[in-house]
Length: 414
Image 1 (cartoon, helix red, strand yellow):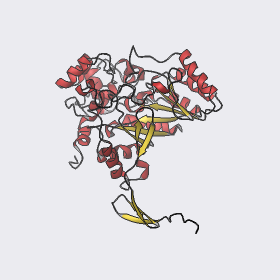
Image 2 (cartoon, one colour):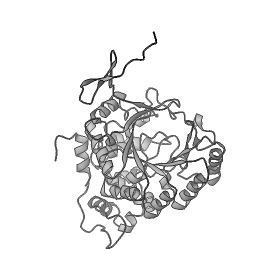
Image 3 (tube, helix red, strand yellow):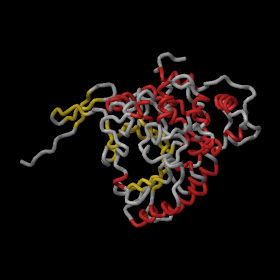
Image 4 (cartoon, one colour):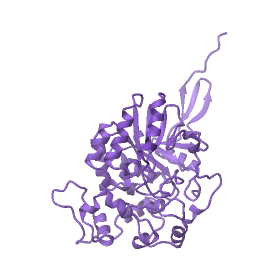
């Protein structure tokens, strides 16, 4: 093992096989076109779901039905810290707990600081509201002309199509909305209000489907909705925001990607850590890319999970290998109860500076802060402009060297 790597990266490698392989566990059926069960998945399945077959494990609806949802579910597979146990007991009406068996198999069962576990299992800090935190810090509700639609930018809208997620990230911007009063997809009448609004506003050319997670909807329902959007002449660009490929790769079926290709959608995938880049995820991403669906990743900077250069570099390199373009690195939004997970903004700038020039530009995402109160996404960059020396602009490169670029100042006519 490479001891030069940060502990959280090394720990993720150790966590890849949390339980000894069981030779009697499920194995791929000969000639099966499903995902082959990795050694890790087979061991987890044999220990905690001995009744399940490989076909069960590879059925995305089985994965959703068997999520970790209650304290007893989690106690079966993880040795909880006192903080984790008490927080789960007290979570009440806040963002619910939900983790697919597949994604739970990536967690270290003994280490609360495991990066995957830290982003999914509630901790005590979630019950404390910090400085400037709010349930709706981005003021999305104030920019919602009809239920489920946010129209903030001139030419694009955010279309919230479900409150259901395969997993619930503890730093979720829409924790006020998702998973509450039962988990469900919105009904056709609510969709129609949003579709009518989009159709009546010709300035809208870009629609982002989010929620909740749109890919938890069945093919037929998603196909219907995308078809209605594509029937609106001025809608040119449709995106799907999702974490499903990372937490439920079994959902990425040939029929799904064929439908997404037909509707010419783009996909924004939420990845957090290199430990997510398993053989199953690689196959899912390759399937998406082979179908001609362009993808970009969106990563949230989280303390103790991915807030160092080496972890982000491994993640972005791994994403490029599966043809996913690192797109955004988000500063974590100040939602209520997120202070223990948020990092200083300067950490994000430090990480970007540690990537620029030290790896291919394709592997360097744009670091953004989503401005509170509805200000929108604000890109932040390391300080590269040093100043001027007459007609020369002084620029600092990735190595800290300053060079003079000829940039004559405008001359006034005499």
